[in-house]
Image 1 (cartoon, one colour):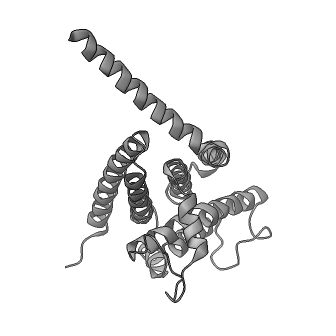
Image 2 (cartoon, rainbow, N blue to C red):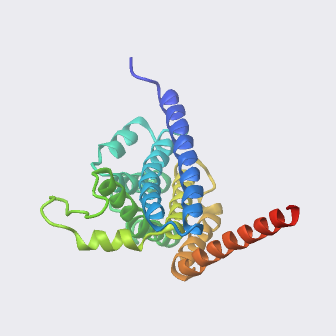
Length: 246
């Protein structure tokens, strides 16, 4: 007998919590490896973190679409019928907008939506396209074991763009992108299951924009260097304390 919607929701909540616990542990291990300047281990842990954040995004959407007072069974089926995780997120956003603004069939556009609602929709769509989709793509690449030489979708050529994309990710960029996705999921949650979408939009969007600003302005090299320096200071302090006791 198939599990009930309530049971499936509880399962997705537990899965999400378990993945979040795994992410927290990998983040700690990655930061330690960076502080110890263990380049090889840090690179491995970075890829594990990328994989887990991609899995987390999938779990986060599953929790979202099974929440009570949210999507109907028919709408849930429409979302899950999409072939890719990115398409599922986009369909969830579309359905949420259609439900909230009572637009069952017409295209969502600046002519069918109130002006502010249209601007908000395009802002959320931009976050999904620019930040969520690449994370999902890298998760799929890593899941296929393409850790060193990613291939194109047909697996006929080495993908220089994917190699560049993977090399551009680091502990900070992954953290900030996860924050962007979390803010977006909160927006979709409010869109579908609460009366506070318009009221709280600016709060969630501000969090997303803070993460985006950090992505563009925060220096990873300075942050990494500060962690190495902190580790060295801690070691020197510990050695001095041991010497004082001997």
